[in-house]
Length: 77
Image (tube, rainbow, N blue to C red; front, top):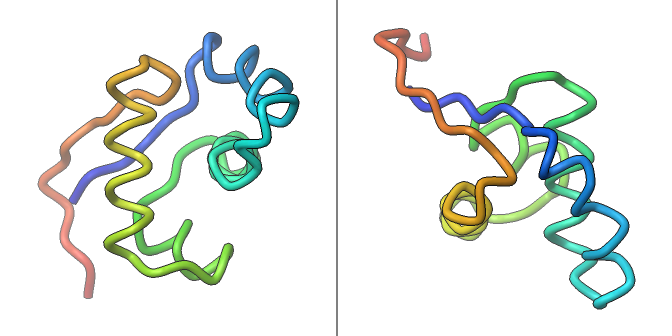
């Protein structure tokens, strides 16, 4: 299972993303910040988006160093 955590750079990027019209990315970052850590499934369910779309967005945000991706041995049950 992968857990995503917002970085300081991600907190600073939220307002810039909103100004650039990247509202969906900003909403994802805000939601991850709200929960302190989130899985793809949590974000997809809360924002009513497809899990594949959320996964791609979170990986992109991770590449920009706005979220930190941590793999765990936990499994959903």
